[in-house]
Length: 610
Image (cartoon, rainbow, N blue to C red; front, side):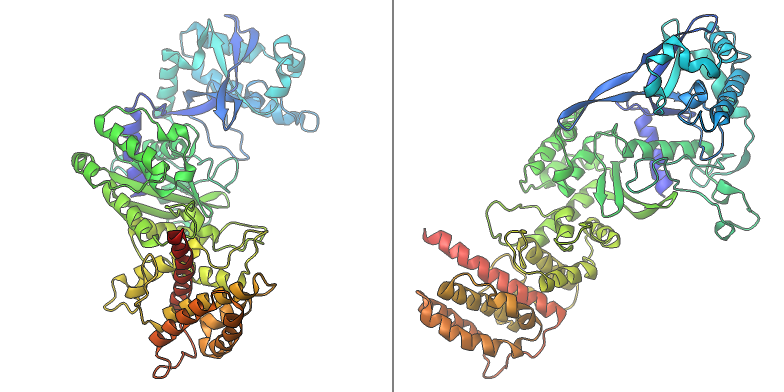
């Protein structure tokens, strides 16, 4: 299903004039230099082909992206590209020449032999010039060549080279392109039924690597590969890609699209969720769907370029307006907009790829109509909605912010658990209950952390309270009864009689009384007793209530706090229902919500009185 979706998207991109996607048999590659040849094959000049691009606040030089004959797949093997390659193959020079003189020579000979054999039958002056260059050029004297000397250091760094003849790039010559395409058709291949297209066609034994998957090898990693007998099918020993027959054309299409989605050429940036690199696309010519999705799921990932794509349709421009508003953190209702896009409500795909040695594993693959995906994201934000501690806190709690709260601020590695990140992201996009691991991680951090202003650590903050509320909301949403429904609200519910919620409120009042009585202390009741009060309240609250009487006597507004305490104790009805000895994990979350709601209400009341 993944490969089929990518193949359909390849066909869409191929028709898009704004996207430089390579046709079958070709690759989009960064080219650093061009070798200018005379008709008799003499090297006249080495021309830099770098382009200036904006990276952050700086302008940097990058190789020019060009469509060239398809890149070969090589690891330790010697294999040459056609009409382009790096300096080791094209010029026979490398930084290993002193220690391994045969290293460059062997690769240059492979380039010479392969290119000469394909160009031999082409009646073109450009082909003759390249053949002449390959036969008269001497790698032994290359470092003294006047055209190479000026760029020797840059060439040895590994940039790719092409040829120029009479001012034109040789690889763009139509006759040479036909020779290349003819070689693809005549290469030996096994014919089988393709699992993607269903056609009987040549099958790819090796699938090109995917690059720019975070954490994977720099040379790239394979999505489909077999190298051990345990993974091979019956009678497919050492058959490589024949174990899962995918045609050469379909293989080319899916790897080309994935590498495009992972590259900087894609205007919609890939996302990072734990160890997963996330790419996404809509099965539509309208590219603004991807931009709108990125804005909703994680506005922090966007930059101006991705939020201001030029549109070709009225609906596209409307979606871009949505994108810009979401980026500014305004809650939106897409219902009216999507009503005009019913015919264009495309299937939307989200693919998470994680590194696995020389391979790439699929962390998750989610597909739904675009409108449904957006509805799920909106539901995520609604479930998280809770009263804020401060006005400048974000309305949208993204996955990145949520996962950050599961990691100790004192830890060297600030990345969340990879499996947790993928599970949370999947729950958001499918509108499923959040993983229990998220809830446990938040509870554990609340138990372990101590308030520390210098290190910006807050034991119970806006995000943690929001996650607890959202988790419990989703957990009980589809169950026959929800014992906590009345307290899973945005703000304080003063009428609730839920014991865990009332105890959380009571703890917040007792903490405030202490602060009013003696100000800042080295260890407040929150530091000393919160974890115990949350898990085993009966053992702690009698002590806290006795202490509160001393604090009330000292506090300027002690009588007000005393009245609050009495009101909450009356709702608890401790005479008939003693304080619980233990609270379950869910009840501990409700305790924390009660504490947070009550504390937030103190500040809200203060603001209203000003």
